[in-house]
Image (cartoon, rainbow, N blue to C red):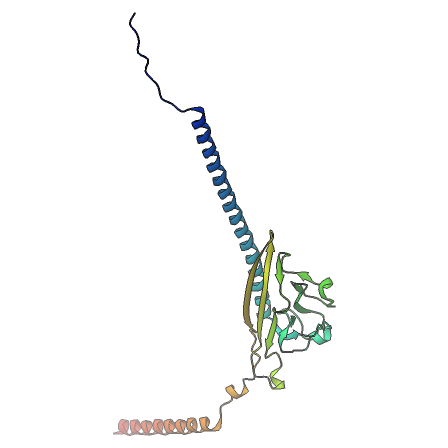
Length: 241
């Protein structure tokens, strides 16, 4: 028999296999952790975006209703009496705004729409009697915390032109706060201005022309009348000849 030469075969030892498996497990664990963190950040971003969209929708709806309303009353003294809210009033820094809706009646003091900030939230009431949060609807979600000290309403030109106010009513809404969710806080700051659609200024001085404007118009009209008469006479004489 021929002696067979045994060839030495190379391969992985048990120790090398254990090291390779350990490194593989470590890489997988770190990779899964990064993937889970990315998924968590994405979910958090989506939640924040949803809450901000809800807040923007609320602000847009408030702006639309205020724009088509009238008889603005800026609440700066925590007085929610119906008769008081039905009187136009301007203020620089108020906690709320009362106004007559587009379908409301100016002689009914119990149909005012009221937006106000209380307990770090925005509230809405559309029917009297007005008794604060217990008679209102919460507009902002619980995750949104409105800073009562910084946020508010500013109303300019709310008084009637008869009282000497010649400015078109303007409402400025300031919302400053944070979104509290999953042990994290995201600050935000929103400001918008809304002008009343109905004209509320005295336009008498603009419509009625003054004397110096009427006199040139009258003299110009006389000039055109005399010119037409002259042209008519010339045409008649030419036809006769």
